[in-house]
Amino acid sequence: MRRLNQFASLSRAIYAGGISSSAATTQHRLLVLPALLSTTSAAYNNSNNNSNFSSLARKTGITAHPSIVGSGVFFFSATASASSLAQDSPSLPKFAPKEVVLYQYEACPFCNKVKAFLDYNKIQYKVVEVNPISKKEIKWSDYKKVPILTVDGDHMVDSLNIINQLYRKLHSEDTVPESDEEKKWLGWVDNHLVHVLSPNIYRSPAEALESFNYITTHGNFSFTERLVAKYTGAAAMYFVSKKLKKRHNITDERKALYDAAETWVEALNGRKYLGGSKPNLADLAVFGVLRPIRNLKSGKDMVEHTHIKDWYGQMESAVGESSRIN
Image (cartoon, rainbow, N blue to C red; front, side, top):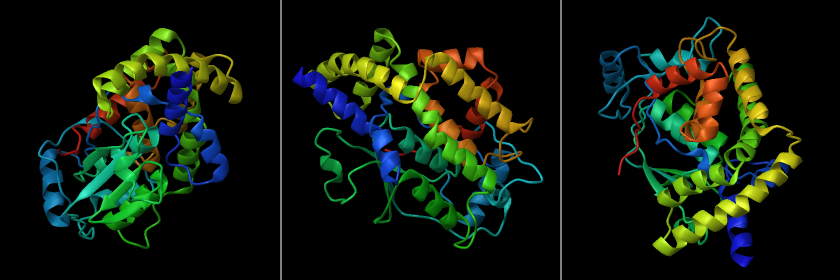
């Protein structure tokens, strides 16, 4: 029972990162999403073709990953925000950090939001997987949650704050990162979308095991810890997910997930992306949070039973390969 409680507590802690308000923090400490990651980070392609991007990268000094690609997509319209419009500007200020390091939990949705932004903007970064038990990797920091991002020694915390700071570094300090529409949907991601995930990925014992099988192969676990975490953690989270389901007034897990997916598709209102012809910050946040579950049963069901497939596929093409380096 002690091990069961330990891993339930551990799992809750893994998904507590990225929220700044005390109320939101309390809610997200109960949100567990270890299984969110069944796909690796992919790089976002914010150019029309490889040649154009390579040229833009040379002009701006932005570090580009050797593989430029295409499998995701964001939209662009006459009302697109500055975060979409500025992507094509030939006069972007130079941002060429020597070292970017992300301290993360592989399954943390807030960490995945940050990775989606880094990948899309072709910012190369290293990853330090934080041991969720000892947290020894971030003992140097007063902030004990993830994500933590260091850029040439300066560290940033809280996923939305990290993204906003990086955006200003890529563009200009006085640029407004989000439009009102983006802010609305960025809030929806943190306050609603993430809450429907845990009840889905831990819906059954089999799905809980599927989730922990992934998380334990990516975390800092010894062989024995991996076995204990997989089975004890999966059992604990199966029961915790039932409490989360009740807490967030969810009666049907899959319906809640499908409804969230359809709500997002409706928000697109016929556009390729919320940002128009290219993704904006809200597109990146939704994609970042959903990307880890794509190859889990819950993610496969979501794509099969909703209209999100086209947008998601376009996003994958736009994202391409990860900008993560070893």
